[in-house]
Amino acid sequence: MFIYSHQCATFQIMNSQNIKQSIQQIKDWSQDNVLLPQAQKDQFASWCTDQISKLEQACQSPLKMGLIGGTGVGKSTIINRLAGEDISLAHKERPYTQKVVVYVHQDLSPEFQKTDARMIYCQHNRDDISHLMLFDFPDYDSHLSDHRHLVQTLSKSLDIIVWVATPEKYGDQAMIHMMSILLQSSKNYCFVLNKVDQLQYDDIAQIVGHWHMLLGDAGIVVASVFPISALSSDYDDSFAAFQKWLFQKRKEHELLAITQSNIEHQIEQKMKHIQQQIDCQKVEQIADELDKVIYQLTAFEKIDRKIYLKLYLPMLRQVFINIYPNKVVISGR
Image (cartoon, rainbow, N blue to C red; front, side, top):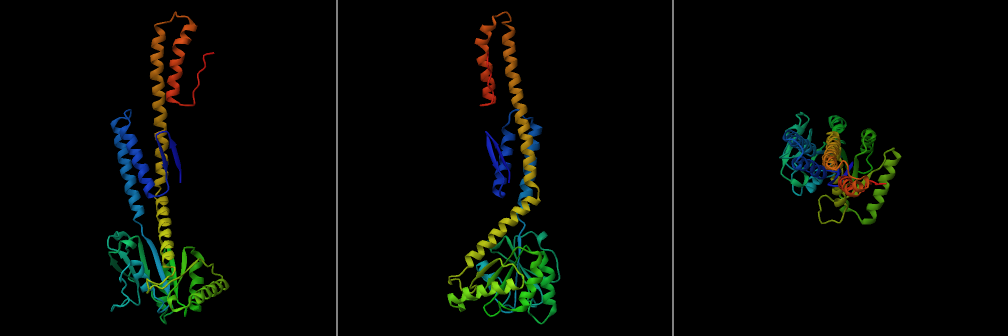
């Protein structure tokens, strides 16, 4: 983030909304500046349009989230809960059990949906998760080795991984082994303990504590753990906290995309250019005012010095104060 301060405006680059405001302020300054020639005004307007386009493209980049878990842990139910309705293909007849099912919003740009024979895309119209690409991986504990290979290869392209387990499977060694392989190079992951509605509250805390211990023994740094009941929206669980975590990751992803697009740097450079323009215009103002003073003095060349100081020095001092407030002091002594 950078902050540019001037008596006319303050620019704070923090997120897409602030960047849009800053670009608009640059455009307004250029169009309202009477000293800029029309060609430069047109250049500023074109530049602002290009930056807005780059910003929108960066913000459209979806967060790629993969759900990984064993058989029957409820990955599809979690997807439906996130979407707010049934969009999962889990209960429909499909030859999808051998592939990764990717849920994408119907308005997502095709450039983010690369063709891959190992994946099947399923479109939805749920705006609540329009910023997510949800990858539903085949069960890693299947007897088919292809499933484990899919998880190991395609998960490398994900932004975050959500590990899903249940009270019956949280201690599964196959899952812990898979985690130890994939989490070596990833810090954006969390753990979801699903189906906790089957437990007493005291049992939930005990299982979460035991899960922490098992993962720690395997050398896995435990991030967030969310005990939820994806099937029961009325159950008092941590699903809201899980959603909040996802949206925070989406925000971080957007900021990263903005940074990589170099928009902030471009704005910073444009601000320096504007400051130079402002300084040049101030110099021009000073020169104009001094010309007026010199013209006046020429008419009174023979006037006494003391009278000159009395008449014109206050006027000259006021010129500088108006242009550089609190910075210029002219003494007549």
